[in-house]
Amino acid sequence: MFEDFKKQKAEEEKMIPEEQDKIRALSRLEGRTILEEPKKITKEIDGKFQVGLLLIDCYQAVEEIIKVFEFGTKKYYERSWQANNTEKGKRQLIEAINRHLFEYIKGNELDGETKLHHMAAIATNAIFLIMFYFINKK
Image (tube, rainbow, N blue to C red):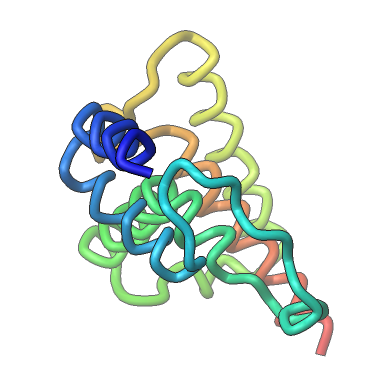
């Protein structure tokens, strides 16, 4: 038992403090130590949204996407993306996705203007297009 604790402590010390806190919190939620295998999904959560799969497992990507949203709010205005719910606006969003993808393929991970990851900008524009699908579906 003590050996397991020493191994866990050694693993924790290799991580940056922010990662340590998040992994400890997740482990406590799941009722396990860091080194144990995750518990299998139980029937209690079958059929329910598992938001933690995105928010906990991919929190850095989610944070970066939120920063892109915030940048757009400061540059334009809050919810300005909704004005693009036209065929022309959708084409402009697709062109923005293509520009960010092109820069990423060239090896530029961060956008020159925002200093945020190009993939976060792509994800943000993709979210807008997905939202237009649901808005227009009504």
